[in-house]
Structures are given as C-alpha cells and as structure tokens.
Image (cartoon, rainbow, N blue to C red; front, side, top):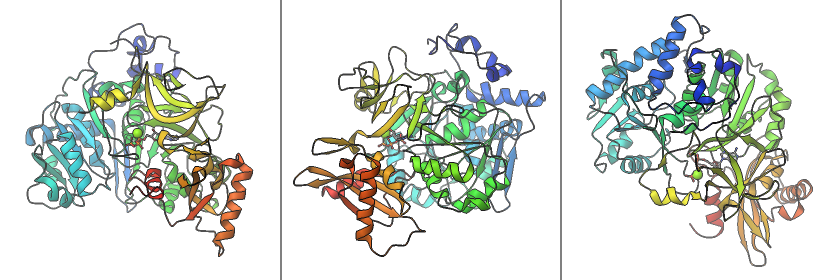
Length: 565
Ligand code: ATP
Ligand code: MG
C-alpha cells in the first residue's frame, strides 16, 4: 500500500502523543502504510497504557447517562477489560470467527460500544442497524448481509423472530435483556461470567471492519464495506481534523447507532484522540432533555443531524446556560443558513457543517477556526481531492455547477469504502474516469468552498431553468411561519415541471388564512432568491416523510406528485 499523503504538515497536537509519533513517517509519505492494523490493540490498548502511565487527563473514555439517574463511566482500561469478555462471548459461546458478520441493532446503550470493540478484537465484521427498523427491514439486512449472528434487545427481538425462519444464514441470536427469551442467548448473563483473557487477532489494514447500510433516501439501502484503514487508521493520519479533539475533550453525538456518523463521531475519531465519548441514552430526541444535559454536563462538542438544530432553535434558549459547549457540527443533509444564524444569535456558537456519505466518510468540512460561509459545506477534508465534474469526468471551473466527485485514482482516498457488497455493477457505476461520483450536485467557489445544490434526482427543471431544492427550502425557512419544508418538482402542462413546496408551519405561528400565507411565502422567496425559483405550488402539511436517520425523503413526495406511487 502506498501512503495516501505525500506532502503532509506536522500537527503539533498529534506529534505530542506517543501514539501518533509512530505513524509520523507514514504521515509524511516517507513510509508505506503498515500491513497490519487493529483499532483495539493499536489504538485503544495504547491509550490504556498512556492512561496507566498518568499521561492522559483523568477524563473517562466513555461516559453514559440515561437521564433517570443511571450512569456508566469507563476508563480505557475498563473498556479493554469488558470488551475482552464480550469478545469471548462472541467467539467461544457464539462460535464467531474472524471475517464472520454480525448485525447489531441496539439503541444508545453501553453494550453497543462493547460489542463494537469486541468485534475489532476478534476480527468480526459489524453491521450496525438503526433502532427504528421494522421486521421487513431486518429481514432485508439479514438476507443481504448473510450475517450469521444478530444482537438486539427486547424491543426488536419479536421482529427478528417473525422473520428468522426466512434467514437461512442466521445461526445465533443474542439478546441484551434482564429476562430470558426462547431461542436466544442472553448476552447480559453470558458476559458477566466470561473470562477477560482474550488476545486480539491480527487484522490486515484492508480487512473489513464494518458494513454500513446507506440511509435509503433514494431506494433500497446499499451495503458499503469499510476496512480497518478507512475507519480506525484514517484519523491517525489526519492533520486537519473535522472534530478537532484532544484527550481532555468530551464529545456528544446524538445520531442513532445504526448510522456511520455514530461510528465516526462516537467511536473511531474521538478514541483515536483519546477523548471522552459522551452519550445520553434518549429513546427519542427531545429538545428539553438535550438542552438540560448540555447545561449540566461538560460536553464540549455536539454533533447532530440538521433536524436536531432545527428543533433546538424552536426553543427559548435564554433559560439555558451550557456548561462547556464550544463546538457544534452538523451534516447528513443541508444545514439551512437561517438555522445557523438563529443558533448563533441564541447561543453565540457556530454550526460547522460537514458533508459526506456512508460510502466516503466525511468529504468536506467547515473546520474549526475557518471562515464560515453559511450554506456552504466547507472545504475538502484531508485525503480527499474533491472536484466538480461534468458528464465526461472533466473538472469544471469555480462557480460552475456539476457533480460532486472525489478523485479515487491512482490512489483511493483513505476513508473510502472498499466496495458495495455483492454489487459490482453499483460499484462500477459510481466511478467515472479518475473519480468516484457522489450523485450530488454542487459548485465550488474561488476559495475552494463547496456549495450543495441537491441530489442529482432532486434537481427541478422548470421552463429550462435548473433549480436546486435546497436554495428554495432555505429561503422559505427564513420566514418565521416555516419550521421545515421540502421542495420537489410537480407536473405542469405549460412548464413541464414546476417548483412545489411542502411546508410544516412553526408551532409558535398561528394563522387562519393559509391562502394568503401561501402568497406571502411566495413573495418572500421571490425577494430572497432569483424570482423564477419561487414555489408555484404550495401545500401545508403536519410533517414531512423522513428516513429513520431523519432525512427528508423528497423522492417520496415527488413520486406522489407525479402519480408514481
Ligand atoms: P441512499 O444512498 O441509500 O439513497 P443516502 O444517500 O441518504 O441514502 P447516506 O450515505 O446516509 O445515504 O447519505 C449521504 C448523502 O446525504 C449525500 O450523498 C448527500 O446527498 C447528503 N448529505 C450529507 N451531508 C450533507 C450536507 N452537509 N449537505 C447536503 N447534503 C448532505
Ligand atoms: Mg447515497
């Protein structure tokens, strides 16, 4: 393997730690990538040693609360001890071996982190799933992934049982539960009694570590395989870092455990930097609980989907004083500039936008200290040569709209997925010339900042004009009556298609006359963007269709408009 970074700047913080200094020559491009790497033995166990030597602040490595008085705090050493026990459950009791696949559908409970680390120790490939999955979704995941083991809790076990007979590869079911369930091994009991003696397996840097299902915003979720290098090794080489953490930092990411963002922001990236991962186990994302937690706990970095911030700014924030919050990060879908502005005016804090995909990891980011241009996703992240290209893979100049693409030849960026599992066609279709194409459209400005226009399929072409939904949505969100909105194309006999906005009204806004409000909103958009982009059709709705990860499903609304449901 060639080193992905030939010219690299020194990062004083990274160089300070024993853990990073050994990769310095790789970072400089003077040495090849190591052949073997295992996140558990090469990072977590190293932190355990650093901690033992008194060279790490007394922060826990993991800090979990449930809001009802329950609390768990682990040092790196405790994490090592407990995860070795779990590794023994998986290997000795369940018979799983290196390369076997396990589906893990657990809410934000400490066991999720233990199972993750245990899988690294044993070389088992972990497939996380979100807690809102239905029986049908679980069946799809078990069949597609050919996983031989599943671990879940009482809530989802009945759904698994209802489809288990159709999953010919599934051999073992593990339940995290206080009680027993027929046909299931009790994880909680088994792990208590296991020995903590376990030797970490040797994994090659390219061995698969996790398989993530994409969000399924545009169709069936795809299985993206990530390796030891794309997840755990990448942050060791990053000199400019999207989270900018140190060992004394505490980070809280509110995303569900089934999403790659949680693996990055609540596992690999903070632990590479020896930081503390904070979790509030909330059954539902609830503003008051989140604001209270930020007021009572020293969380310094908050990561959440834009929906989280859209929800938080709807509250009167003057009654909360955050204990230590300094850095906010959001992405996964566009962050509306209006929401950024409101958050800034109410809390004094900026929202740093990130842009990425399950397949690619974080491609662009507004890094700490960088000038913020509201509405922009920031600049290319380390290892990624991001460009705007045309149909023939030609790079377009600044300001010109095209497809957002990442150069993946001759060197595949560190952080990239290995492939779509069992789908060589899809893997091949995502490549064009020397680039991986994201399927998203955008522009880059003269300063190298990227601006999202929309998913390829979401672009509206009306009377020959190309209109990205995000800009119209952002304009609408600026109006105090609008809490959330989704903009899609709708058929029109004259123009072919026109812009239609689905609008959820803000709870604090009461309006009897929706017809005149619609006119007012249309006028508002005409004033704030190019007038031809204004929504000619408007519908007020109670809620918008979303994926389980909270993303607006514009394709569902669009299909309805076009009678394709
Ligand atoms: P599927 O591929 O199954 O249809 P998905 O693309 O939503 O689902 P993810 O990999 O979770 O699955 O999401 C990546 C996509 O999310 C990106 O391609 C982009 O469309 C969108 N996205 C992520 N971050 C941002 C951002 N900051 N601004 C705009 N869009 C974003
Ligand atoms: Mg996608």
